[in-house]
Length: 414
Image (cartoon, rainbow, N blue to C red):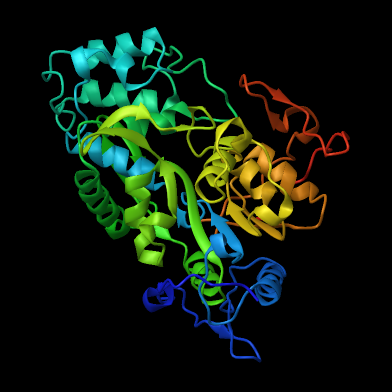
């Protein structure tokens, strides 16, 4: 019998509003997933079977007390589109990005190239004193350079924007979005996230917005089937947590609406000076790291299982890992593979993750189209030549644990 923590998550479980369906109930009166045509094949049945086998009906629990752990990515998994992007665009349009100390953009990220720092200084220098907000809502040149570095990972002139990072442990552009929150308090960032969230939920599906002189995605939606999944897992005693490469204060705002408490959200963290955020990344495993690919494993091992130092990057024994994981991108490849029971992948055409999922070496991978705005079929994934992202940014064949190369995989679920 599991010892359950005395939390009260069930008191605040979200409804399944928007799904068009009602939660299901098993023969024993336990909550099951709502019947919904958005689930591909027998994915819903397999998840319900796992919940029935591993869950504790009507209870709440904590991984610290042996409750089964379920980990879910946020952007393009729990929601369609990206909350981190939405907040970045809102910050630019509402002039909330501050001029860095001394006007030196290299202080915002140790991974910015000299060319990128110079381009940002040329576009934004002189527009505000150090530490003061830049007028990016009205100054297109500065806004456009910020957007180019963030979204394209290069300057407007085409120079590489980030270098010197381990591709399997950090995504410097995602980190930079959190680092650009420097100078604000977490409470102020939460207010920005609330405003960006409302703007993107109110916008029509497929809407775009102008940021500087560029056109960017302008809408987000909670995926109702994922909302239902969270509530069903919680109702059956699973410890449900979010692991995201977006800034933690931002994801906390979004996750509250699906019944995920703030202390169950793991996102990009930066150090603080008093109450004020800085651009300094919090370390994991002894190095600057964000919840991206192996960095997600590190954060989970450190925060949930109490493993610190370089060991946090290593896979733990099965009894000390999540039973369920869900994600959509190559940044989710490691923590989803670590799940011991089932791994749900939403098809976002990401090579490494889709190669792992379609190869399905142990029969525990489930592939589902996006529930909102699913992507069309693409050509086969080049698993045998480009299926593994190397730390230096190169690509190599994806291999199974026995060393065999995963063959190219057709895109079968769309």
